[in-house]
Length: 61
View 1: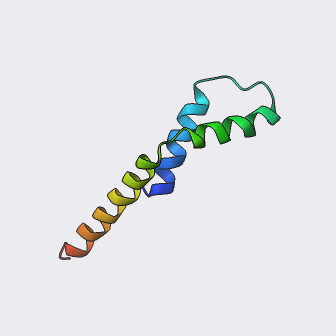
View 2: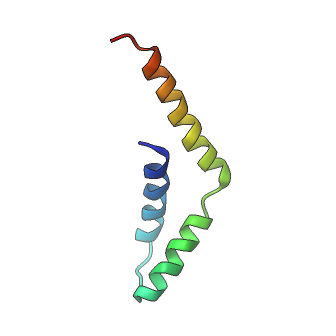
């Protein structure tokens, strides 16, 4: 997965844990879920993708 897919997978998982009552509340819950993800996780998502890209370039076809 690319970094943004990993990020949204976590957000989606957090949103599924609780029933939403209104559409207005949904935007608040999305913001809360996004803000709850530690910055270190975002760095790790990007670092992992970078390593995978480097490994792809090193692989001979």
